[in-house]
Length: 232
Ligand SMILES: O=C(CO)[C@H](O)[C@H](O)COP(=O)(O)O
Image 1 (cartoon, rainbow, N blue to C red):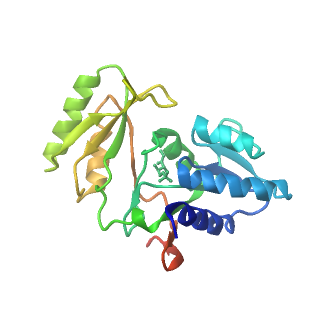
Image 2 (cartoon, rainbow, N blue to C red):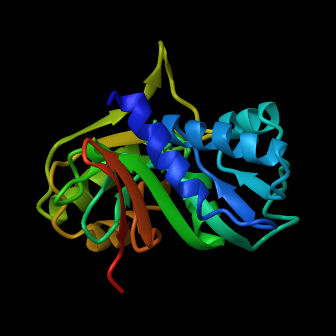
């Protein structure tokens, strides 16, 4: 099965968790796009849901597929968020933000009673860090923030490159108006320690470590679709 078909299978399996009347957080990325398309079909045939999109891109897709939208101001508590991930470990800790939507994705996931990750099996890792960690930073003080992030990493024994994400010739700018630093630290032995220390850097707005937010992962692979539950 090709990569797109796996994403579709994971997205289709996630739909079984969506019940009539639910308030949904709706993720960003190519896997989430497949979910949005399938959800749109269910909405067209009578399912009643309301969604909070995790990016402008997702909002546009939801509108295209007829999914009613709300905001966290109008609907501050959600029943379920369904989103992709760049990688997940056996505890269902995630790295997210490859699509640049990590801040809204984390706000929406944290506002939800539960989060389901949809992914193909290539996203499974023993330990986080194969995928560069996206760190969303304020545009002001970029150089100082990058240096502080490097020092945080060094204090934890992590080394590697930190690159400002670009789109063409210009820095990539998030929906919130921030920049993203992609930190290639390699294996992150203690994601919780890194998370805590990154939040102590004033210019860091958010980072892509999603720890203990997802309780279920729906993972499509050559042997079919598996549902993985996080241990409590
Ligand atoms: O975190 C994300 C966007 O910020 C995405 O969920 C992540 O990048 C996975 O995307 P895809 O489904 O395209 O592989």
